[in-house]
Length: 405
Image (cartoon, rainbow, N blue to C red):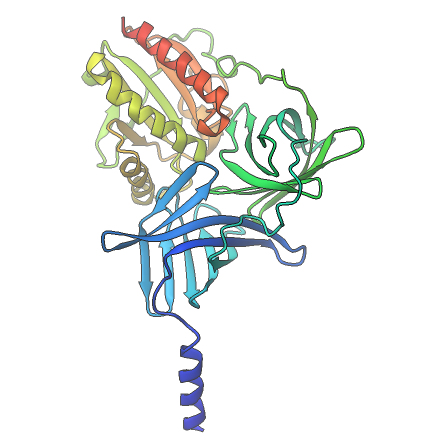
């Protein structure tokens, strides 16, 4: 009997690999096993110096995960910004395991497989070039329900069967979506360590898109879209306002070193100040933090200061501080990000009673040298939105330069 057990151990151990192959992989998250709903994305494994890194692809975006542990038959790696990780077994040409999103309380563990040498995102043949989805679309999520909401779909194909794009909403965009058309149906996906998005859609006889949207294993809804190349969202500067009787804001919270910092401190007097309401768990906040980090370097010497207020998904100060510090390290953030100890938009509104209801993270305040709020911007249209992002940057930097004069 002992000989049989030892033989079994030797045979099964041979199935595992103790090295991680370098090259292109197709990763697949199984969102719903019974419905066979699978979200694909691509990544590359490579050596940088002597260090194994993993680079996730979403359209033009590249996300480098450098906390990779290859040990015996296991490959585990953490995402660089968000509180999520992969735990897998290495079979040489495949990895089998789970993705764990620690920011979620439910449905946070999703089965994962990866296949070496597969550079395609979706397992469909290219087929005939097809550009019926190119353009701008008036989108309704959960149509005809109490959860109904509006968005703008922006899709690009350029005469190709392959597609990319995003959805713009008043609270932010859906970041980099990448995929293709197959048999007239559109498939788009995104994975960034927080978002795990899968969209499918097909035009009906009237030219309207009808489809399904999956966010991880916890959310599924219908969406419809009508082509409208001139559609625009409500002005993001008109959503959150100062309450009557207020011209300025006041707050004090601890930074990650547990030092209390206030906007009324000497450091911020007679300065132009940007206040960023955000969370390290929020992908749109990540994009905005990346942008603001560069803005701070550009304008700090001219009198600009920035303060981030982090509304984390945990009441544990040390864990919240660790998450915020990961974000700061990733984007070389030179400004203070304070730990509010509060969670959610309702608590954010309560912590800043001089503002009307806060409806999105991020929400960004632009304050002049006299301490008066000059603009409140809701949401963030990031680099995946193309022209909308360029427009936002131009308007923001024009405002900053005017306030600095």
